[in-house]
Image (tube, rainbow, N blue to C red):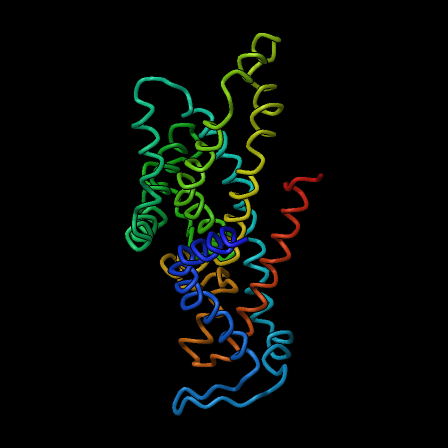
Length: 296
């Protein structure tokens, strides 16, 4: 028993630095945010008065928050797209061929690129006279779809409210693809080579091996990546602020939290909205654990 107690004490001693950091930068902010959600906080003198559920009632009835939450839920469309693409690319770059290290690094470059730099580059791509419209104009002329020497495609990719949010999703897809590709690559490399070799000897083609061997064996990785991607989609903010600044129907729930806290200085309402977003993230996480988790 003494040895068991000493091992426990040593274990907690090693955990202490991480627990202290989590208490300061995670548990305390979450607890204080929950406290503020039920308070009217005055930034001038730092006083807070209890207001029951007034903030929650306000955002429940506010059309702007409904629209922001709808945009955040719509943003979840990027999750299956980026996960399937990342898994397929990871499968392709998992082959031992010349130059594969270069391709892996190339796919990861957007992940380490600063969001501000990437946003400026993509804003140029989406301009009226930017690369995307220029490319579509060239394709149109090549296929004979556009007539006249000066006819060109002029689509307002981030100014048109009907397509702006999908344009931001494409940016998110490009920015995060390499990150999930690396996670899937780690999962794929943990699959014993003998399993695929046995399937090949049994006559399984590449499609059957992918769906009947690869996907089931990387299911824990799929759960992790899908969960991370879902939370990131619900928290979409940086992409929005660098590309559209919340305009053109790209006003997400987290942008609403930012707006209330740092533009309107209504920290209580921002905290309440943040809790609502957290609640939706928890519900989505439970659904994903039910779907991808171990059903034993």
